[in-house]
Length: 82
Image (cartoon, rainbow, N blue to C red):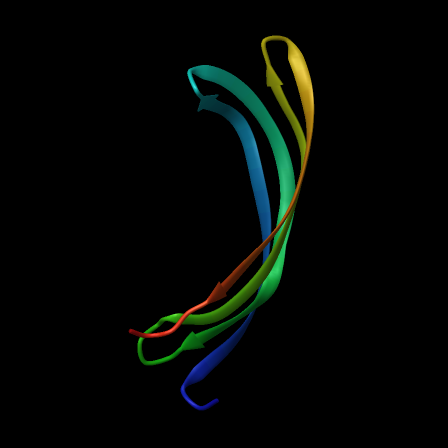
């Protein structure tokens, strides 16, 4: 509508396996989802507006210790062409 694409986003996130953080190797077992809406300018491909909610949970294991993780986040973008 009016050269703008209105998009609903729904995705599944998985982070399973080893990851190196500051020289330490950790095992991850994280799962979650992200959902939200975007408005994209059709001509330029520019994200004019985006509002996404991310929820991730699970465990990370390092040096024999299991660390429970819960991450809730919200990403917002308001863009304009310069």
